[in-house]
Image (cartoon, rainbow, N blue to C red; front, side, top):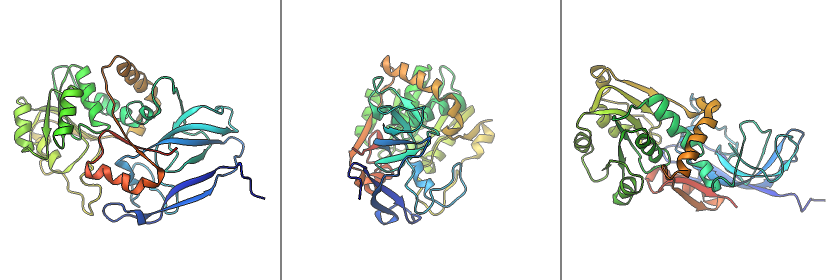
Amino acid sequence: MPDHNQPVNRRWTLTARPQGLPKRSDFTYATVPVEVLQDGQVLVRTHYISLDPAMRGWMNDARSYIPPVELGEVMRAGAVGEVVSTRNPRFREGDHVAGMFGMQDYAVTDGSGVQTVDAGLAPLPLFLSALGMPGMTAYFGLLDVGAPQPGQTVVVSAASGAVGALVGQIARIKGCRAVGLAGGPEKCAYVHDTLGFDAVVDYKAEDVGRALSAHCPDGIDVYFDNVGGAILDAALARLARHARVVICGAISQYNSSAVEGPKNYLSLLVQHARMEGFVVFDYASRYAEGMQAMAGWLKDGLVKSREDIVDGLETFPETLLKLFSGENFGKLCIKSV
């Protein structure tokens, strides 16, 4: 007889490699029984699931910093939730945890890569934004790779987004000028008035190159790139001597069949500059350091975080597209409960 107390799991699996923008037919939405726990395993009920531009790359069958999601697998996604059953001594029922639990209601895990989080410290969505992967990306990408010095000019694209907003605020904390690029008057006002950037460029309404020249008269010391394409080229053309270009992402290129590379890369030679890519997972052993710093800044009001939360696991394919249209405002998450 079926166990009516056993929960059922709604989940999204990847069933086709997207061509261009992902669409609903690239995924399968199904309800399946929750797996029975084995020794060493934990059952987590997800509460909030993260949607990130990197998910588009994970869908491609291509060499990358992480294996692709296989066809038929649950779509990979970071999430935060609650332990509802455990056969692992590291975790207790009721623990709040964060990890790569996937686009589903329930995840069974052996605990690898799972972190216990303090729900009394901050609302759970913050552990997917400032206290999660975006926060760690901004912290280590800017401070370790970009290495800004007081008085220098830091420029960041997608400045109203989950990572970019934090990069600019950290730059200000470290005594730098922060210049952001964002799309539209509402986002630009948020970046300047709420987040405290020194200047902001509306890439949808302004000549980006001319605006960067005006706001960075001595050149760009650190450019933190989240978008690639034409905006990366405009920044490269305006680098200061010994500038650092941090390649975090290239959302303008993720749905293209042929990636458009930088045209102005010779500026790296002329300005004795360097351009370096990084992946936040390489800093996993130092996450505690980053989280401690971010938590302190949040508590002191030096950093603000904004989350864009959409209700309903069933909305996943359409909600994901908000990332690529620029429709989301802040860290995009799905509330799954």
